[in-house]
Image (cartoon, rainbow, N blue to C red; front, side, top):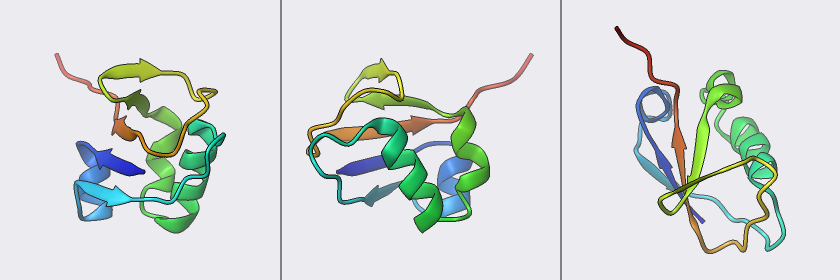
Length: 79
């Protein structure tokens, strides 16, 4: 699975994209948990990210096929 890291996530990981092996049937929440363990710099940010498969925002309970592109979007603030 290709992961796209945006904003503070790409800064924390030192890259904008990465690959992560995902078994069919895993949920987005499972991927985030494993990602936080594999890249500890991301762990503090993952509780607040929005997730998109392709161009569609999805809940963490979404079941993945394993061949999608998962974009992780940090919260945006400003004024």
